[in-house]
Image (cartoon, rainbow, N blue to C red):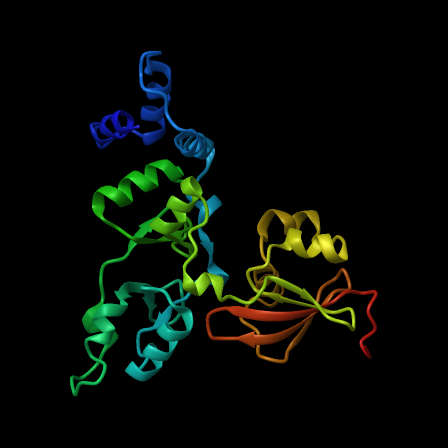
Length: 276
């Protein structure tokens, strides 16, 4: 395995990682020390990424945790405590106007001091990438440039999603859970009245396993999560308590929301009475 990694490091910058892996598999002699099962799984996962693009693994726009450039220090700290990320995009008017990113250690340097705070003073450069960029090429680029986060933008400059190096690594080694992940609310919880509580990141497919088909074929090509469906229906982040009705008859009541994402919803299938 070390030989594999050494050869990958010797590749020129303009060569794709996937090409290097293919060559390694073809060239590995029978006399080589056998690789372990875990190493085989890692290589197999890498090969599965050959045809994946950034769009396949990015965090969708509706789930991006971002901060407005004029947000005061106390509110920024509250957002950081709630979201538990280390880096955040900073925008002017909307996510289509991102001016940089911040790291929480730069914010905490102001906490408890009399120094004047302005997010613009601690901005770091943000990397913008196309959704069609191959995942393995993106991983190599991020490693070489020591970039931990990138924004995915469409042909018109609009923000489609966000990508972290953790997202890319998880595609190879599997999900990386920390104490914040373990403490998250369960994705889906059925209630005695027949309604179902879900978080905004719940995959549509998982919800449909519980209540039957919801999305049309056109919607299915564009929407992956329950939160993404609500944003698609409204074109905006809804308000807490708002009820959104889908053409299929399913109703979504917004239980928890912040300025950037839909956190928690209550789903009422068509077969469940509103009086329930």
